[in-house]
Length: 274
Image (cartoon, rainbow, N blue to C red):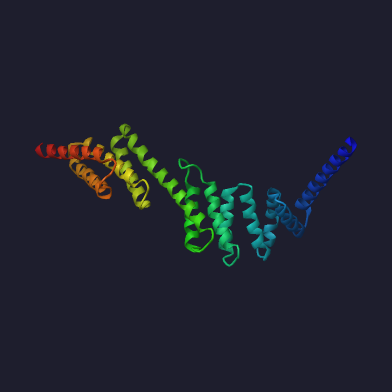
């Protein structure tokens, strides 16, 4: 029995070496046709990294041939299956552009967006892939309103949009919370950042909180301003209060907002008297 197990083990090892030897031979010295055939075989066997190396070899020769449509989709799918999501998103998107009449165009468009979403980092890091994912899902939703993938596309679109809003909100809030180090510059930057958030994301989940912090930034900037600039800034801060109250008449920040309004109006009176 022990001898039989050894024989089986030796046979398996030998088969592996033979397989690796065949792969290296075709990769380095095989014809284009042999490389394409083996790449397809490896792809079907889910050996995606090896398949990708061969696809890279044959792409120049097949770039103008009908097989290129299949190759490009397999390249995109191989990158997706090996978790190279950024590259997968790029290649799926490229597939939709190169083969607009393909039966796989819808699938590629969805997978492009999904790949960029998987490639996107947490909200606090570089949002470039997150933006690509948002735009790709928006494009998919517009192009395929009756797709069976629409529920997932809408779900992911909302999740990504929320992630980007959260990043924009946190950046604006950082400007406000660090204003003590450079009041004029940081309060102004906070106001602009909250304005950008509200303009870029109409109906934002952060709208009430953003309007409140925008009021706080405008209030603090006005109070700490020199007499020469205080008049204009007090008016702007009062407008910020009015905008918050107009959009959220029963805002959860009402008590604090009313205190800020009272301070702003008192400062206006003192400014008129002086």
